[in-house]
Image (cartoon, rainbow, N blue to C red; front, side, top):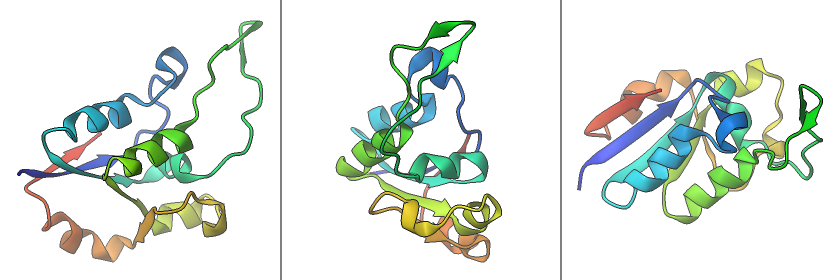
Length: 126
């Protein structure tokens, strides 16, 4: 089975319109036929932060009925067997403590990226 690493760095793409991240959804669909894994980097590291409550989102005076819960999407992806990791330096740069992350996501240091990439047949960068 082809091993694919989906590197997600452009966080919050279309999350208001779709109520999920299109790359996470696409990865979930591909995981049915491919051995998928995800690396969260840049602003996408925020997807791994566990949230208890999402504040009301209002756009143009209208309340969004279905607010994105990307931490739940990441958790559901891992429940399907997709390994999810995050770039440790990007988490630190954003002042996020590891204790706030959902269970199961793994840190990867920037220096470890070449070894990580070698484990996959394909790297998809979004």
